[in-house]
Image 1: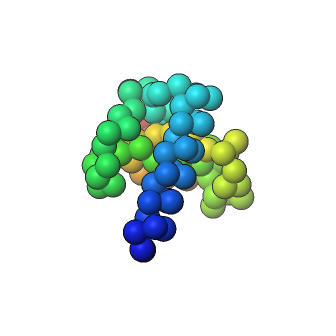
Image 2 (image 1 turned 90 degrees about the vertical axis):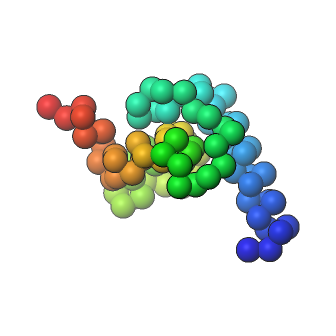
Length: 89
């Protein structure tokens, strides 16, 4: 990815995070812990990811209305399940 494309991607990603934080607050929507915008390492457990409320694999859209912010580790644990594993009955 060229420098200009990478810069555009990071700017757009930042704007989407800002919009979702304005809507939902600044906590992970899956675990409730605070999100840290300063973490830039995508492999870090607490890196901010976009979680699909209705998973793509279940015909969920890619619109912001179907997204929420989550830590990378929380999003991976949830997978395409409708709820987090520890919340299951």
